[in-house]
Image (cartoon, rainbow, N blue to C red; front, side):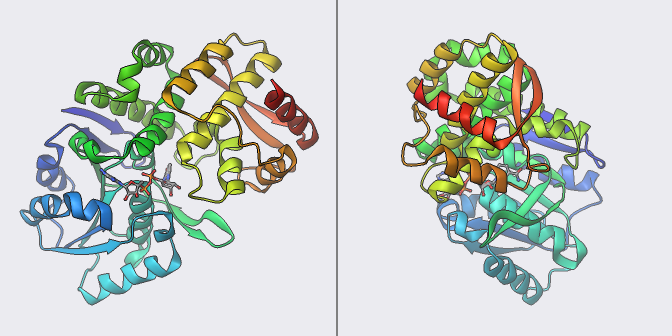
Length: 359
Ligand code: NAD
Ligand code: MG
């Protein structure tokens, strides 16, 4: 079993390995004892696969109520959020109760926000079931979407603990696996050159990791994220480095319409642009061409979707909630493991994007 501590204001453990859930009782005991009730929140796909298994484990600790949302991004809505709160009230949950999120980033964000706001905040734990959730389950960002924008309503709210059972990833579709892999690669690129070399060494490990490889990817990725979050819990400084590849990535996702491309595929395109920019603007030596070939081998889309003009993408980048004062911040790399923030005037960045796409 691997264990990473997130040194947030209240530190919490992330346990990675099959059987991690067996530690739940002990972790809760360290944090003040068993909750009065547990509200297990999951989506229908995950519920079918692992709902019973997890419920049984939770029931050894406290009575469990289950709330199932439809799988997909649409669950991060006011309607589902409201329905969860109503259900929690009807089932008699109180401030001594706990929420358990079983699923990918969608369930984690939704359940986390419900926990953050129900009776001004009750404890919650994360049980991630996607590779991408190595990212989303750590760091304490919780949110639902507004029709006018993704993640527009939320809270910083840390879980009490995260339990990662790699066995749950066996059923994950390949596209979802690849989506999570983009964030693993991102973590390596912004913080750890030797981890990146290890990932690059064996294509089959990235395409189809065995359990040891998976545990290593999850653990290293979480360590990097946890380290950055510990330095900057509320995103006023270095946490912005986690946005590597995301300025353009988010714009691609939003411009295509959510659900048309996975987050990871969009971020992969964004990372390639950021690497290209780093070489051009900072003179960094990041072997762009080799990296691009590697991304293509993994199956990431080779280029920014053609149907999106650079102007449209620029408008989405400007609309991003992280855009500061009319300038667009890009995370670039001086070298692998050394990110820097570079601000661009929109016209200049659009011209560079256009040039990148012509290469
Ligand atoms: P997801 O939760 O929608 O899961 C992807 C799909 O895989 C869903 O259809 C789900 O039902 C299915 N699934 C989940 N686990 C499975 C399993 N073990 N076997 C088979 N199918 C399984 O998506 P995601 O990619 O995990 O997360 C994306 C969400 O995470 C977005 O809403 C994004 O905003 C959010 N996010 C949040 C943070 C954060 O810091 N809070 C960070 C990154 C992403
Ligand atoms: Mg991301």
